[in-house]
Length: 115
Image: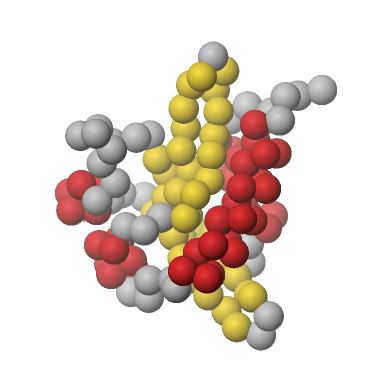
């Protein structure tokens, strides 16, 4: 099990060609992430990578949560205001599905108990 955010980030940077932290969200960007009126504990990263002969960019979020232990989970962000600010085209559903499957496999590593 990954015990801190830095270890989770190492997993992300090992998989994608380029990972850059997005330090602060605007009010509009935060509002796009609200769940039940609350902002989950997220960190956002702009990732660039290749799929075949094409390159792509998207925003990945890292959620921190406690369920007994401290856990982390990656997911693709659908935050349109954030994509607009970063001047990144919203990814198509096929690419989102493909990258989310990759992130889900990384999430299994993040949640696996330490041996």
